[in-house]
Image 1: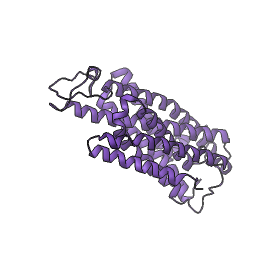
Image 2: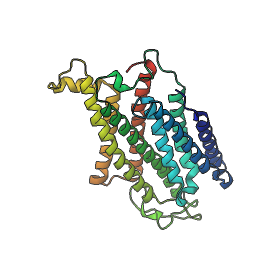
Image 3: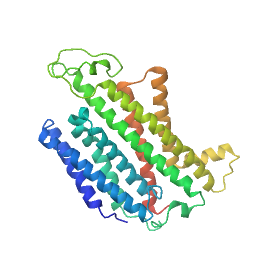
Image 4: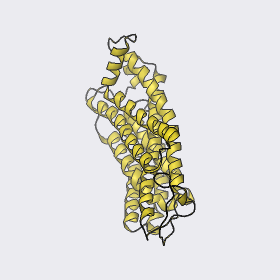
Amino acid sequence: MMPPLFPLTLAFFAVAATLCFVSLAQGGEASFRRGIFPLLVLGVLAQAFDIAWLCLHGQHPGSSAREAIYFASFLMLLSLSALTGQPRLRPHTALLGALLLPVTLVMDVLVRVVPIGHGALPERSLSELTSVEPRLITLHIFSATLGTALFGIAAATSVLYLLSERRLRRPGKSRLSPASASASSDGHRSSGPAHVQWRGPSLETLDSWNQRSIAFGMLAFTVALVSGTSWLIRVAPGISSSSVLSLAGYLLRQSRYGLAVLTWLIYAGLLLGRAAFGLRGRRAANVTILGFATALAVLFVYLARDVQGRP
């Protein structure tokens, strides 16, 4: 079912993405950058209307993988709008938009344009196709979607961290402001000749945003993993819950479950590394991006099952 404002939503985000890349190509030209934030807000409002319209027609974010992915893109762009609305981040609107907008545009186009397989029943929710409690399925899909969106924000700030750090390390090109000097890629101070002050958020601030986004994302994703495990156990064909080995083998053979476990382990390891070994900076940013890639893979495995017509 195509929501009424989807073409308009797509147009807003596509133009905003174009302005982001043009602004970056022009060295952050303010005349182009000023139009990005209003387009983001208009696109988010249009997408919010579409999600509400879909809910009224029985296609809420917990009803299918398609609606979950569409809702995840909405949450990422809503967070992007909130971030770029802050005065300190306004100069980085083009860069943050160039990082997140292409990903969300691909997600939106896939879920709304790619046809559903002949064996699928698009008008029926997952709860109607299985014997699992509908509230459990809704909880699983919503928490997985929220966790993935938070991981997406963490990944965007990680890319911004890596690019900012690279720029700050160039001798004679830029220098750290007093706030920025408090952190570098490995938590050490940076020094060196500089002529142009870096006015963006400090590396320490970006690293802190990364940690907070992952912490809250892990809470949501843990709920998704627990509820998803319960879901798979209930629908497991001929698998006895008393047989731990057979149950574990069945779960790990499910590609979506294996990727979800891998995502959880990546971010759990990152949080443990931060707490126990002081892992931060460039290494933490790289691990964050890897984890987001596996989290996206989980959603697209669900989408592939929808396209193939498999419940």
